[in-house]
Image (cartoon, rainbow, N blue to C red; front, side, top):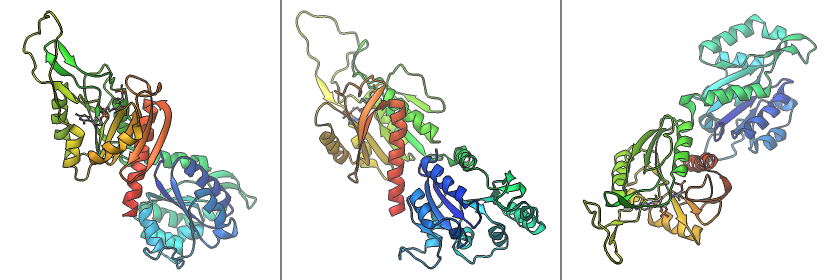
Length: 405
Ligand code: PMT
């Protein structure tokens, strides 16, 4: 759930700095992108290189060491962060922040950020109970800063009492809970429209042309989007699946009905994913009565349906448009062709001849292609799991693009 969350960890000088190393490691393992900023005194305990290796990012400590001439580093980092955590937070940094003092990179960044700031104090028990420290903490509480209370136990100074930096596992738990409240979910406030299942094209009142799509892939995508906080619309052809909780399901039968329904939801959608297997042809004439059996063979004349995805590709303004391609040979090459000809941002290519992939299966094997030329193959996995992986990959690429702009 911390996937793509940007966490700035400000490390200040106390013996608990060693725990901050474990914190970075656990945050990174949970999918967060972590950048570390250190005070000069923190560097006396652990070198920046350790944090660089754990976070796989540059470590910042000198306000005047501008690594990128296009930005001012402390403002850029203040804007970049989804959450700033000060751990361990000394009495000194708490005092400076409570009084608006900005005399190094950490305190300057703390004043510049509009992200939530969490402070995890660690110090000697008597320092923690000092009236000035209590006053500063109260003031920061009133200013909207959140504190991760230190725990009680043996302190490095030999005392037993309150002042130990909370354990890294517990801090990660609190951060995860913070980001999984509905307003922090990655797709909160975004409308995601997904199509699923087959379409049925009527021949007469009792017969139709269709395909073997079960809807499993599209329904899994809808469940994944909903779990990520999206306002999810699932436009579904006729399938035998239970409606996913929380998702608005719009039932349709034919390609023409699906086109109509998708168009109605398109304008304010952020992401549109077309997992449905839409019929490319429909009977030219629909018989109002059941066709009677006749001697000899019979033929049904078919006409093209509208290509819904291609139509959306011409209407696209801000929407991220994602298609699927069901192929039986040269899957990636055909997928690339559809990505370009339908003006898509992404296409998810499945070779439906693979025994673990395609129509009706519980698993799928796909390659995600993007209009930027990225190419990510995914091994066989349950469609429900794959849906999460695909959404995460798309969101990651989208957020990197936004960041680059
Ligand atoms: O439903 P399941 O049993 O779980 O199976 C999943 C699946 C195999 C159906 C799914 O993974 C998949 O590949 N869906 C797309 C199937 C398909 O129609 O592929 P296509 O290559 O023919 O079409 C390419 C894209 O154009 C698709 O996104 C399709 O929705 C869209 N299209 C096609 C024709 C048309 N008239 N309008 C469209 O929008």
